[in-house]
Length: 287
Image 1 (cartoon, rainbow, N blue to C red):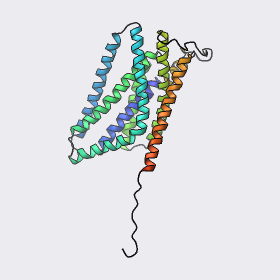
Image 2 (cartoon, helix red, strand yellow):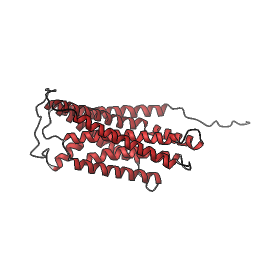
Image 3 (cartoon, helix red, strand yellow):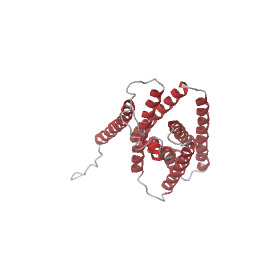
């Protein structure tokens, strides 16, 4: 439930921030509420349709084909989690600036009102597709019951929506930067756990045979099927009997995310330092 909550909360908050920026930038525009609401509804419906198609596609595979499909979906989920962490670090601020500019153009009459609904709808659809993919990935890991995943989903939607609304109304002052940093750490561990799960699926299916022996057995301390073990398995990829290849996949995923994040942040810092500083010319005597 906790993993589902973290992912859904993060995705809903990202979409909510975009909606909030668009609402604030288009303040006073007649009909903006209806258009933006239509965009939110359209994005949600699109995500639901994709979820239904994903379930139908999954039902077409049996045996080893189902295992390969699960491994493929988890792999895509890992890639998207990595992309989310790294992309938000480098483009989050630019995205907000672009959204504000679009809202200003609509308010000034330079862009049609429908542009608001289209941008919001695409944002909700994008985050919704990611949620569908991640929820399926969490479900097939076996660490959470469907009911717990559902409760985590609902709590994430409620919390993400509530925080987005409070931020938009200015009722609370939450350091969003620190909030995203916290969820980034959790998502990094979750992505690493999913990578280890992919390796486990492929090893159980016989597609990967290297380093398939367990490195240790901590069942005596914390079993996989215990309440705490199931939570940690879903949230951070805990395994009581991890194989060598699973450990390599886990460490490699963390290293890739940290390495890319450091590289992106370093590039942004260098670009900021190299940006020309505007100086106001001083008047010389006699001018």
